[in-house]
Structures are given as C-alpha cells and as structure tokens.
Length: 424
Image 1 (cartoon, rainbow, N blue to C red):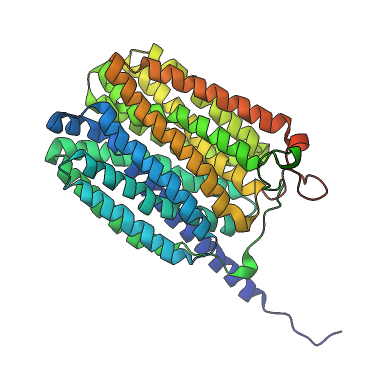
Image 2 (spheres, rainbow, N blue to C red):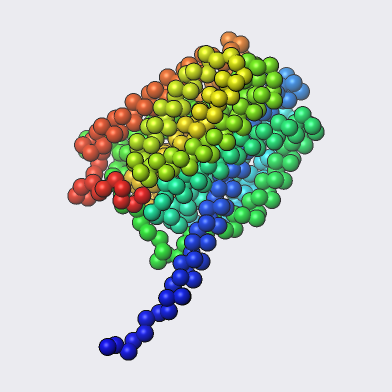
C-alpha cells in the first residue's frame, strides 16, 4: 500500500465553492452591465415626448438618435469585440462604464439636436459596445454545462433594463423634467457599474473549458461553402429590423391608441419584464433542444406579435400582447449569442460576435428611424409594424436555410459534426 497522501478533500471543496461564488459574482456584474447598457439605449423611446414638446423636433428626427446609438454599437462592437480577445478585461470595462456615464450626463445639458445625436452615438460606440463582448465572453468561460442558462440569465438583465430604466425615466420626466431625468440615469449607472463590474473577471486559465466548434469561420462562399457567421449576420439584421420598430415606438404606439403615456410606458415595462423571463426560458430551451431551434421559436413569436399589434385597439389586449412579444423577442438575443458561441472558437468569439452584432445593430437602428419616418408621413404606425413583421418572416427563412443546409453547405470543422448536446 502506498504511503503517498492525496490532497485533503476539504481543500478541493473549498476551492470549488470559491470558484462557483466567483462565477456567480461575475454573472451578476455582467447582468448589471446588460441592464444599464440596454436600458440606456432604450431611453430615447420615452424622451420623444418631452423633446418634441420643448423643441418642436419631429419624431423621425428624435428617433434618429436611437439609430445613431445603434450605429455606435455596431461600429464600436466590431472594434471593441476584436480588442476584447486581446486586451485586459478590466481596462475595457472601465472605458465602457465611463463612456456610458459621460454620454448620459451630456444629454442633460443638450440644447440642440446634434448634441443629442453625438451623445447617443458615444453612448453606443464608446460606452455599451465596449462592455458588451467582454461581459458575455467572461460569462461563457465561467459556465460550461449550463452555458445557455447562464447567458440567458445575463441577457435577461438587458430586458429588465429596457423596461425599468425607461419606466423610471418617464416618471422622472413627469416629476422633475427631462434634463434632471437624464442626470439621474447617469448617476444611477455610475453607482451600479462601480459596485458590481469589478467582479467581472476571467477564471484562471486552467479552469476554462473550451466549447466544441461545429463549423469553421471561413469567409462566406469560399470554395462553394457558406460561413455560419455570414448566415447568422443576415438573420440578425432581419431579426433586429423586426424588433426595432416596437422597441423604439411601442410606448408611443400604445399611448396613441389608449390616449395615456402611462399606459404606453407600462406596455414597454410589461414587455421587458416578460422579456427577462423569456431570456432565461430560451436559454434553458437552448440547452435542451439546441441553440438554433430555440432561436427559430423566439423569432416566430416575435414576428407574429409584431404583425398582430396594428389590429388591436383595446388597452388590455395591447398589454397582453406586449407580454407575449417581450417573452419571444428577448429569446432572440440569448439564442443568437449562443449560436455564435457555438459555431466559432473561443479565441475568435469577440471578433465574430462583433461582426454579427454590427449587422444586427444596423438593422435595429434603421428600423427605429423607419418607424418614426412612417408615423410622420402617414400619421400611423400600422405600415411600419406590418413591414417589420415581413422582415421577421424573412429572418425565419434564413434560419430555415441555416438548419436545412447546415451539414452540407456550411464549412465543416474537422472530420464531422459532434453531438449537438456536447458543450451545452
């Protein structure tokens, strides 16, 4: 019998508990970043009313601020996404946090439209875009067996932020004015990120578990094969073009139908509260049924809801449909991230996610402006919602191509396809 002694079991248990705690804290910090990032971008939806009243700007002109924040997210996501694969996470989180706080504070002093535009572009490009890829990459490294649930929980923070921050801002606008409302949003963002973001750190190198890669990331159509990143980018553009109209204009649409801004802001809050549940639910579904199947279901629910909205004219039915829309739309972001995480190597995740999200944010920004443009010219949001639903149907067609031809048309990685359940 050997005299060698094995390490005390208690030490391994303590280390395991410590690692789990660190992973949970990292996820909490990432969730907070998502909440304030997406919530800040959604603020324009409730500031349309006071800015239109004070300055006489058209809804299309004000909506363009959201478009520019989306363009900032697109360009910044590509730039910072590449750097996130190489630079220290803490540096990126500091830059992104400072960018968000400064941009929100600057809006409280704005006196012209170009200042609103510049601040929103910085909010997306120098702020949230810098946080987005790093916090998702760190979350993916901490969780291996339940990565879908972890990413779903983190992205659920974005849905909560999109509902809670605009709802709170709307109450502040009515109580103390739009300038002070922006200032409070800046202060709250600074406090929350300063407290929780320091916990977002990569795990020790030996504890990182790679995700099996199903497809390579060859350029699109190289050698007659299609890159999954190219198809996911096309799907992301159409998906976000569908969701961009209601995300930017649901509050104004419901306000016009019901004659109450409180009901309008409540509809967005309900959508995002159910969206938080939807992101977790679709994360769990992705773990069980596969990322692409979960993505397709979320997209179908979103598309159907956007098509139905113009047919409703009762407060209760609009609020109920807002809940269903929120549940479905929110799953798209979770599942899209999981698809990118699955189909590319971990060392290229930031770059690939930046590419996909660049296209996605372009679609989102164009749809947000398009909704305001349509309203200004037709006095109704109905055409915008119907065209947005057509974009959603096209997205489902792209996902069908991705599913039908995945094994034959996409560039394979290695000698075959691993079990879809592996790595989830």
